Length: 333
Ligand code: ISE
Image (tube, rainbow, N blue to C red; front, top):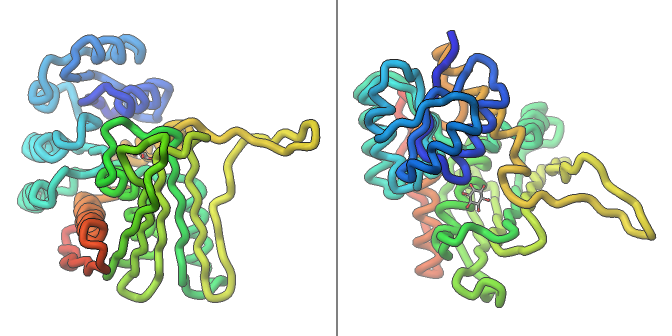
């Protein structure tokens, strides 16, 4: 069975996902595209084979010739589209964050639990990144002892214009929150956030430095700087009792020339996580065909948003803030 995918949102991420599907993800095809900007939908559909352009998101979700929906429209539309997909009984890959508010996250979760089927996967692509998967494998082998620190760096060359100091946390650092939960298989208990002065190149938003503590006492620190200018860079180092494991820079080559050694730093997240995005969509298609959920669930999306919310509170209050998250319902275990 070929999974016929409908794409909602043909902007930066949507167009990239469309290209990934069109360039060959086994067992899937891009069948239809919707975007508020119909010309944008047309150009993405045209550039990716013969996908149809659909006037409205509701029409796309209700279309019997579409088996699954990829949601990459603006953050504030994610929750209502996820609930509509659940209502139509259609699997959906929803770009992160799951929703713009915790109430909206909870509405998605209660709709999914009422429907009795896991249909929502949230777009935390790092869970499919070969580097982070190798880190998880190294931890699972238990040669390094228990983790103590997880040091993270997350830099954009120039982050999207809509990113404010708050969204640097809720839209960017949310990646570190999810991947730390995935690697450590733990929830967070406390968080503190501080900011250096703003970069003169981007005076309207502040870089953020986030220090999270898990319930079992692992410290996760995250530098998020979305105006680093030189390129897109993500670093991660897990320090354990008897060793450490870190993400290796992943350039294909390094060049030595005139006394210098250099390698390319990717321009943005689409290039840096190209393999992860492909594996994420392939994993999603696989989960639809097998019925076994993969990747981040709606509960993971909620947990990441709850933790990001506590980060925002900690930043605004300049105080160490408690992260309050109920235990995951059995439905999500
Ligand atoms: C963007 O939405 C992403 O998801 C990227 O991974 C992140 O680096 C960037 O800062 C976000 O705006």
